[in-house]
Length: 433
Image 1: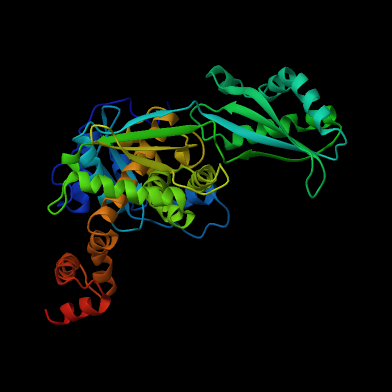
Image 2: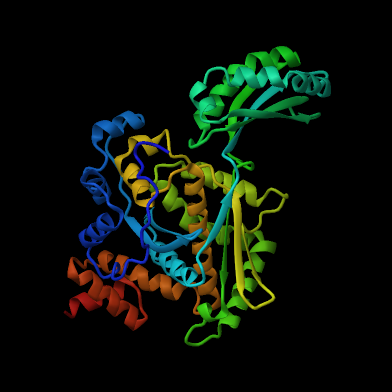
């Protein structure tokens, strides 16, 4: 837990009338609900949220800042606790879909989650070996020494219960550059994402690895396939919760299972299926100042771990007719270090979430991914993906056509009613007013 976070608190994520408010009204309601202070409220409002001097210290060659819309997904209940989830994303329908699915799930008990300990992996590559298996045995024999060396500098992490816990050794007898041995450090990074920690440890012990193996050490870097740091979420939905005006809940559930099955067997479908999951996950990762590229890399590597790219989720119909959705994937998120500590809006977003550990953040985030997947499959099993998406996209089309202020909503509604969400139709409607 960091000093930027509020202690665990109970809120109601079901914010009635949120959609009907203007942005300032939504922010007022959020601040009242979560107890945000004035600084956090201002950071979430966006204007001057990231001062140029602070941005200049975060990356190189800064010329300005770049903003994305920051939305709020409501209705989430995870492990019996309510969460309001900030999402930074430009794509229409993402926040609405997550909120709507969370509302359906909420009526069925919400999402249940779990996660592994925050173990990250660093790799040290040794080349130029004539006896790679002998080198492996020598490294394993020296494991206590290597672990102690890796832990020798980060006393704070050790004091928090973290640190290097184990080593693993991979042997590659043949490769285009000859035999190699790769030592893996398995490090409990606590509430950090962990890249800097494991990279520092790898650099520290690399010379000793070279001595023990008799080879040359080349790479000394973390792996973004955080397969020891998995997060899981599940949801159980009754047929009644899935019933629409035209379809029974049992038919909707069957359609969702059939749609997911194609993603499980066909990588062309799996790529789009998993992109939809990341539509939910990435915006939370971005809003909280975490590394969305690392999360994407880990997710897709995990989806292909058996040699064939497949779905990150499973949807099944239980014996009692309920629909059960599950997801499991790497989720290397942090609450300390990086932009989570330097970006005011990221700090404010974490206050809104009210999470008190990196594991809790990972679990909420993966639940949002499952909700987003639920929304896509439900749409595919009912009216099709475009109807709802294009209705929400109509606001963008109205703006592209020149609508301003109150015109945007009016033109968007007219486009949706006409079933023609196009710039040409929007211009026609603007010209006729």
